[in-house]
Length: 189
Length: 258
Image (cartoon, rainbow over all chains, first blue to last red; front, side, top):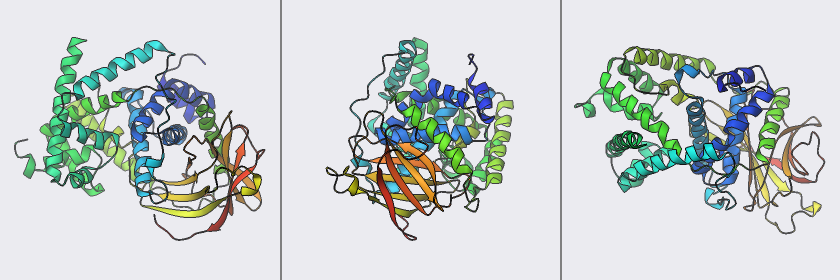
């Protein structure tokens, strides 16, 4: 298959082309898996998320419109929501299985193939990591719990024994700080 | 934004994080169209929010995962043909309406001329809305088939087949615990039985933890089934069982929200 755009591949997926979904997998599965692993913290659940994401791509009627943003952002939004669905289900279901029982797979490591894209990705990771270090520990915690662990503002407030308004204000300040430093770092690169 | 604490602007963060009721969301969408302050805040949010994903370290993709993914797509197609069609359907028109409203707002936002940079639209925030499941029902308990000799080191193995219900979608989730780790391309395969007919629902692998999970989205309704079985196959390409049966459903449980 020639080098088709992601949008064109999605259109072919709508027509039931399995080779198109396979090509999307080859392009994006590593990012999806890595993101899911960051959210879920173990291989078993990360694998489940990848299966659900590509099943969703296969079955969804929603059209991806390249005019509205990058495919990767669209896919990551979908991956995050599915990852958090799985995490919340596990939290609710913990009488049957504790996510603490699911251990990280020590065999995972940074891939050494496709070094150019990995290098670019690592640069981006360094940028956000550098910006995040400017946050106070409570600000880092609210980002971790909200973005990566899928807790609601209400749940985070309850955990910390503080008003929701305090959590919202902390989140707002964290985002402003991150934005300021991301803009500054972009200028340095 | 000076009067954020007492104005409709207060709902921005909940709106952007997808929290709040449908009514609150609609109310805020009306407000957003007219509030330049909240529009600016929404831009700020998106610029940073999309970058948070970069914090995930890129790790090696399991080599056998692609076969599982492609196998689940094939399995889903075959299951669609045996779906009962009587199960709860997601209210598609509501999603379309919600998405249309998001797109309408987005158009206004774009036309207002202050949009900064390469921005992911608000509507995609709800592309696949993260939700806490409304209920989790155990459909079948799965008992280990110890007569096959595979459970000598795993005397407490068991499994469950659950129906996980949420607002927009139901899922059939199979869990197994304390079961032997897969190796050399092996895969556990889930089979749904109805009137003696066996249909594959997909495959999964099991690591050192001895835990396996497989999820089947039920967009075509809940498939009719009399029983659930899990086999251990030499690979994930089986169209009928070739390996030993590992788990079988023992009794149906009609109660039990988790």
